[in-house]
Length: 123
Figure 1 (cartoon, rainbow, N blue to C red):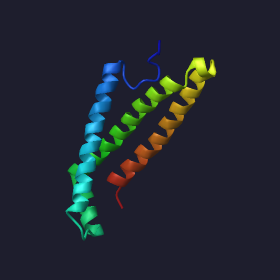
Figure 2: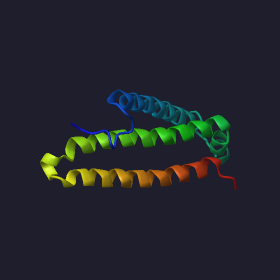
Figure 3: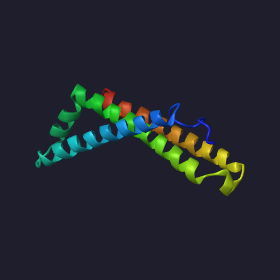
């Protein structure tokens, strides 16, 4: 039995819902950005900064950043629990999984702070 020590949520259903919601948000954001690029063929920096200067786009971008982190966490946890097992590596498997997830969390805290600074920082 796999313990819920490192999962994002308390149940598999919750994790599944978070991952599906985050996938929909990421897909919508991708369609929006690609559509903006396609419909602005002679795009300038002012056009691009005008899009990201709007409050709704900043909020949407921040939501996408959080969804990316959540989606990746659940996916990484799933891969690690499937492939880094005690049958394959012995007792060190749990330590390796925890180290990888800690490293992922550390990197993503940095990305989150950096993303907030980019979206909401004042020059």
